Length: 355
Image (tube, rainbow, N blue to C red; front, side):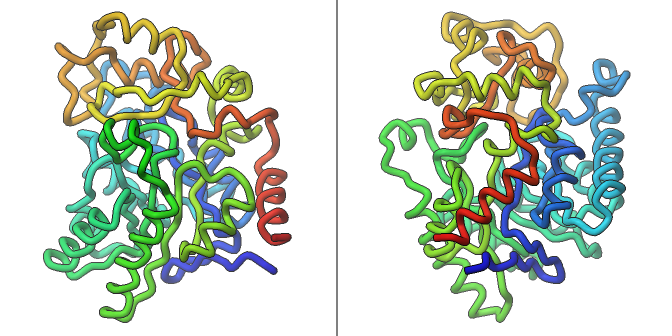
């Protein structure tokens, strides 16, 4: 049986796979265009996206906006007919400017999490760009949708449902993750029910995508059976030729063992999933005082932060694995080789369709 396409308004992805937005610099134009050209949805992450710009150290805000524009343009040149989206964290200081740049560069969709994107409909008013919140509970989905309706008469075009097995920052309290009672299957059922109620009431189709720990074609089928219309996957796309990260970053996934993957407390204040490498072990012993502040996150106090998350993520993408923060999904240890995006998508689709 053929996998159904993902329909988001007037957008149609023949392959219902969204490549997760991974920052700093893990998913830029090269990975996004490769996924888009295979019929999926390619996503560029905005987090400190200007880290390679010559003036990044002195003028990070302008460097980030300039780089975002450039990355969308490059992705579009390489995939003129593909669906190119952008992931923007609510927690960043330049949120509004990032949204504006996405609209002006004609990105197809903005996916937004790491906080509640309550003002997003206002920021995209008058444009045709699609908007999708990331939620980790039915309660969060209901809150966002009701707020959007009340203030802006706007429904989401897509809802991404992220569970506790995702990589990077997680929308759960540390206690919830330690107890291990939260599971994506339950959350998907809960959110799908909430979304369906709004669909019926307002006569608008709102597709959902399950995310976090999805690894195989069998996983894709499982979440389709639970009512999701797509999946979002990050970890699998790191170990691809087209991923924008340094080869050392990709090898860190390949060399990782299950026991290396830990829940850490990020300097942002949120729990996150990462490899327990030299940096994390150092941070457990004591504070690594930042040498510079990039003024990137709303909730970061450079006088108190355990280490500079921007510097740690930039080190990682540049291949400095010992001093880098390496975010991973729960299944990163299962990655054993680097493949082309085309091969990976073909494998996932054929496995899903054979079940």
